[in-house]
Image (cartoon, rainbow, N blue to C red; front, side, top):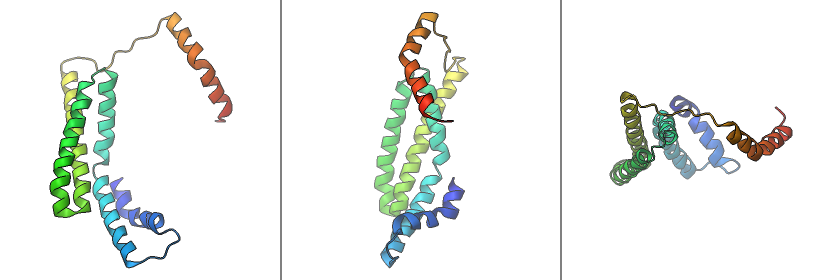
Length: 154
């Protein structure tokens, strides 16, 4: 992702920003700042995806406390980083603060999942529904499923 943004980001941003307008010096300045911000932000994209998966594991195992702690840590890191990094580096500092918050929250989520797995606690427990529950679910969702399937040609 970072490589794609670094190689093609400026061209894509130019098409988004400029479109029909003429390219001026101020537009090129904005384009330069936007491109550097995008590159800095994209460096944390892997952590963002891993964090979403780790959060899904926590929520799937009914652990609501860890995602709340991760949001609090991310907020604190973002406020701290935004205050100090933006003063020093401008828009790149704002992107660095966002990346720092993403990495910190992902670390919290991964450490909680690692502790859960190292204690031999299964992150999720698969329970099959009883026959009655299955038919209740089918009565509720069945018409929606068949209506969507009928209208969507795959």
